[in-house]
Length: 181
Image (tube, rainbow, N blue to C red; front, side, top):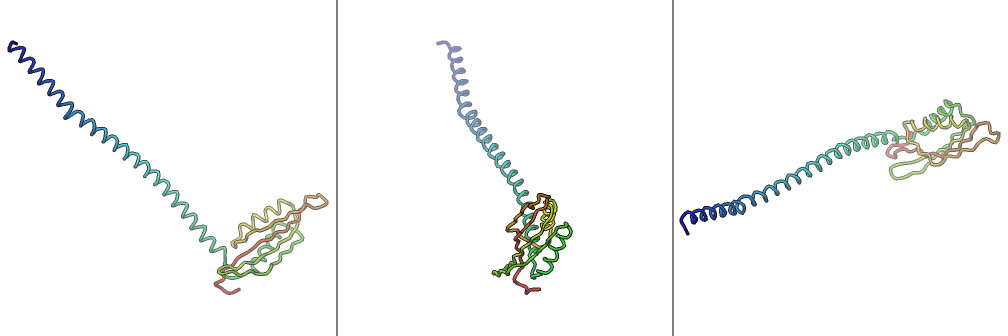
């Protein structure tokens, strides 16, 4: 074999060895590393998206917590530390007069004592148009004192003149830590 042919074979073999070495020792490890970097970047993007989502949830949860704190503060104000039954009954009578309701009767029941809250059932009766009764209930809901409506009974007048008789059983509360006032 002539020298030039051997030299070309050696050069080709050296080039092939260099290409194989480059592919095996440089290109494939770099590909693996690039794939690992891409996977890590994808994982980081996912973590960032989760954190961003959690941040939005956190702000909405924070707002919800503030609303609940305001509701709790309002609740404390709506359950007075004194009985103040007379004031409440007077407010009910005023609301009934304000909405032009007839045949009014507001009667407290027997007080029920519990550990921290006492409650007083209150029976209310009156007569008026359905619109007037609805407005009365809306006004009742706006009172500073918490009143839970347990039962409402509406009976249409026998003459069908639009009058409705209303009977309502409600409960009002007060905290036990203060004596009756």
